[in-house]
Length: 115
Length: 117
Image (cartoon, rainbow over all chains, first blue to last red; front, side, top):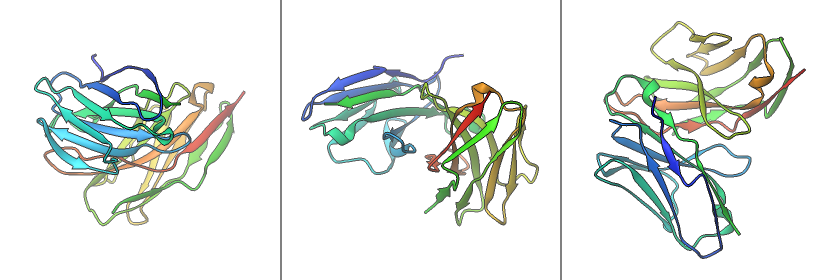
C-alpha cells in the first residue's frame, strides 16, 4: 500500500539558509499535518492543511511557512535557519471523515541538520 | 488544553517477559482517541495500538494490549513475550475526536524501552 512520502530524507543546511521539505500524502488523503521532533524530544505539531487551506496552527516559527497544493502535496519552507531548527520533521496525512483513525499515517520524516 | 504524561523515561525488560508502560493524560473532552506509537532507531513513527474513548473494551493487537481507565485518565501499554525488535521509544498520544475530520496528535515525552537478550 502507498504510504506518505517525504523528501528529502536527509538535508544539511548552513545557518541563515533556506530549506524546503516536501510531503506527498497517501492517495485520496486530503489533509496534511507537519510535526517537528527535536533531539530526544517528542514530536510537536506545527501546522495542518485541509483542502489546500490552513486548518490548524501550532508552535510554528514565523520564519516557517507552508502550503498545500492542488495535488494535495505540501511543502514546508524554512528560512533564516538556526541551529535549533535541526530536527526530524514528520508529515502525516489523513482523509476527512474517512475510514477510521487508522487512516492517519506518518511519513518516514526528513532529518534536517543545520550547521 | 490536553496534556500527556509518561512518568517512566526509561525501562528495560528481559526477552520473553512482560512489561507495562504507563501513561496518563488530561483533557476536558469526552470523545477522543488514545494511541501508542513506537519509534525504533530508524525514527519511523509506527502505530502500535489505538483506543477510542467511547469504547469500554480494552484494545489488543497480538502481543500488545492496553489498560484504559477513562475515569482515572490512564492508558497503559502491556507488551507480552517481549522481543528484541520491541526495543524502541514508545510514545503515548492523544487526539480529539472531531467527528468529521482528524485533529493533530499530542504526544507524551516518551518511554525508552530496551529488551535485553
